Length: 314
Image (cartoon, rainbow, N blue to C red; front, side, top):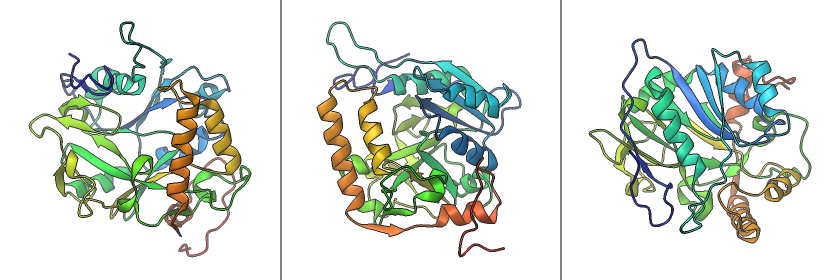
């Protein structure tokens, strides 16, 4: 069943009937919409496998650069499901661009969700970093079982890189916004990890769950309504931090803008959005080496040689 606030977009927010839990359901899956991420996908998969992600549900928006071949070389069918999912769609009557990402998330929940305890809905430039634990499952326990967890973006900037660095993304970029809770506009948002058998409402950045509506928890178990997520008291990365490597190098950002956006065919509007976001990120940054230290401490293989990190325990 679909519906729910269709004025802005018929598919921005959707209503579903939760899938039934399957016998023996367990583990965590990641759902991501992907297009032409060949330079980045191996690092992203290897990192998230290392923290305990059981399965990857990849919705392929017409990749042509070998991304899917790389995924198949890294993951067997036990750990990988690829769904062809070209996302550019319009409503015939209004010409509204439909949000193929929200539709993909609903499809994943309805068709695969019953097999998992948790589903995380993130992009390939987003990494889930346990802050005090070794695995994602351990980090999620601090949310005290609430079925809908919201993680604020921690946006990382260029870090002085003009060209694409040789090192992996999550080791190369260590400068992020100083105050994530004070970001505004396109540089401030959340991604969610949910119990898929409880989800009744689906969108890209927020979910509703059975018995709790739009109430959501932070990583430490504090519960609030969606409208109150941006209160300073709710912002938390005590146990789980969502690193969003939005800008990368100046070269990579220019390439990103040139590719365009799947949900907006107005190139000028997209360029303006990215430029405003970049300015907001770079306005006030601090060094954050948490990811680099975590990788070094746990000897995580990202598919490239990892340089020892100062400050890591040996």
